[in-house]
Amino acid sequence: MLDSFFKISQRGSTVAQEVRGGVVTFFTMAYIVALNPLIIGLAKDADGKYIGGGDAPNLALVAAATALIAGVMTILMGVVANFPLAIATGLGLNTFVAVGIASKMTWADAMGLVVLEGLIILILVLTGFRTAVFKAVPTQLKIAISVGIGLFIALIGLVDAGFVRRTGSGPVPVTLGDNGNLVGWPIIIFAFGLFLTIALQVKKVKAAILIGIVAATALAIAVESAFKIGPLFNGATGAVNPKGWNLNVPAMPEAIAATPKFDILGDFNLLGGFDRISLVAAVLLVFTLLLADFFDTMGTMTAIGKQAGLVDRDGNVEGANRILLVDSIAAAAGGAGSVSSNTSYIESAGGVGEGARTGLASVVTGVLFLLTTFLAPLVAVIPYEAATPALIIVGFLMMTQIKGIDWDDLGIAIPAFLTIILMPFTYNISVGIGAGFVSYVVIRVLQGKTKEVSPLMYLVSGLFMVYFLQSPINIWTA
Image (cartoon, rainbow, N blue to C red):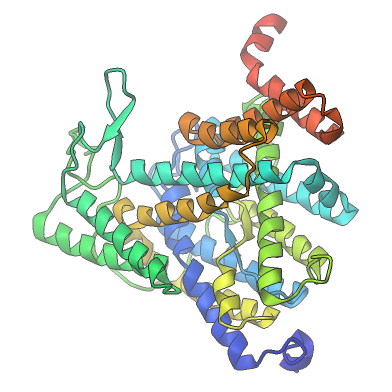
């Protein structure tokens, strides 16, 4: 029955091979259950509240919901699309939701925009318009967006680990550690986790990132137990300890496993964001999410399809419409589950490398994610310094795509450069994308190459110009 439904023999695989591939995929991306709560679970919204509306972080709730949504959507990918592709909260997307959206409104409003973005993508898939939009943006600008997000993720990792800090005064905005010096055990834990993860990556260990997080966390717990370091900032006294842990002090949990709680599921306000910020700003936030979701999935799907031998002579992926359909539902489901947009994971390549060729591997990965919901209390012991090496590694992996940009063509090189540098330098993903789009259109017009610019690019660039000029426009219309 399994062989017939998933076409296992037809694709040159076996049940054992699919199970092994599914397990490997899980271990290559299970870090998201620990990392996503540290990215969105510790961020406050515009009202100073954490996800769930409380005054304290709800990391276990975020971890449980992250694993649940990933498990359900990955199983759906396997059953509906029969493709060895796993789904979970998108790195980069969750950072944008935490830093760029929730900071302007409530968490419920922010997740409402994520749901809205997913529904729009679903409509684009059902109408066939997604392919048209995909073709409108130059391929090399898509690469630049991914590279820029990679640098942004790496910068966040360095800041959260305390490796890079604000100076507080003087002409230089940031510096190395505490006033130019690396001090304290937490930095040592960060360095240990980073170099261990790098070593495991070099040795091509499948679960390198997860092993790095677990090993660094274990060492952090031992160090805190021995030296009683304490937090970087003491909320009760207001004291600052430059040698302390950033936000999360590692300690053994009261319980390793517990009955999962899903209290944050459904905590979203679909149109609430439009009441907190201007219509144009809200539309552009949704568009930015949509764009990142849009092209990440296209690239991931194509790469996995090629690796698994599931593409035709023209490079079209087998069952692409079903894959995109599930992926678009996952984007909305992530918002509805209060864990940010879910998307396809390139780490699925690890499972394909182990022989996965069908959706059975995705089902196996999904089931393992569901089992992980019972281990949510474990994430509360993971300090930033143990988890942030993963951001550095993921940033590196995204950065490697930069070789696909033609740096001799100024018409694409300058927009790509602005896209890449402005994301980390402004701490804003949408600014980088907007600068890249606008400069691309302007330069192509100056070059007399207007035929290379699609009408949709003119429209999107116009929207970004309105976004950049909001302040003078507000003054002019007042």
